[in-house]
Image (cartoon, rainbow, N blue to C red; front, side):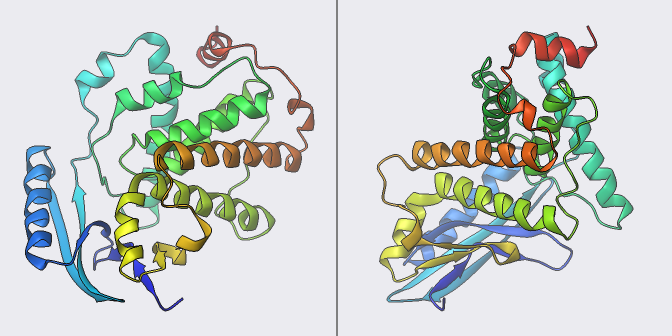
Length: 287
C-alpha cells in the first residue's frame, strides 16, 4: 500500500481540497492552478484554496489540490424556472440538504458549499429514471442518478438517500432508513455502500487522470476516511469510464435498496410494481 497518492488534503479550519491535475512539469501545474483560481472567481466563488504537492514513484510528478467555497444561496432564477412537478423533486432534496446543514451547525461545524448548486442537472438526472419497474429498481436508479448528478454543494449522498426514503414512504408511510452514521449493524454494511459509491463516482470522473499516475508508478488513490482505490481492482483503462462505472454504480445502488427493504422488513415491496412518476409526485404533493 506504499505506492499511494492522497486524493484529499484537509486544511486547518476543515476545508477539504481534492486532486485536480497532475503533470511531471511543475510550471504546467502552476498554470493549471492559476486557471482554476480564475475560473472559480468567474463562477462567483467567495474563496479559493489550493496546494501543490510533489511526489515521486517511478517518476517524479506534481499535483495541484484545490477547493472552491461558494456563497450559501440557491440561485432564485433556477428555482423559479421549475415546473410545479420539478419543484416537488427539488424541494424534497433541499429539505434533506438543509436538515444536514442544520445538524452540522448544531454540532459546532459548518457544511461547506464546495460548488454552485446545479438544479437543472438534478431535474435532468431524475428524469432519466425509468419508472414503472419493481420498486427496488426505481429506488436504486433514483439513488444512483441523483448521486451522479452531484447537483448539491455538499452532502449529495445523504440527501439522495433521504430522497429515496421519501419515495419508498409513499408506499409505506412508516418506512425510515435507519441512521447510517450510527455505529452498529446498519453502519457497518451501509458504510460499505457509501465508500464503494464514492469510489465509482470518482473513477467515472477521474479515470483519465488516474491513468497518468498509474503509468508513473502509483497503484492506489487514498480518499479521506481512508477509502482506498486500488487500480488493480478497477479497469481505469476502459474506453468509456463514465458509462462503465456509472453502470456499476446503478447495480450497486439497486442491490443496496434490496438490502434496505430486507433489513427493514419491507420485503413485500421488492416485487411491487411502481405505478409511475406522476403517481409518485401526486402522493408527495398530497393529491
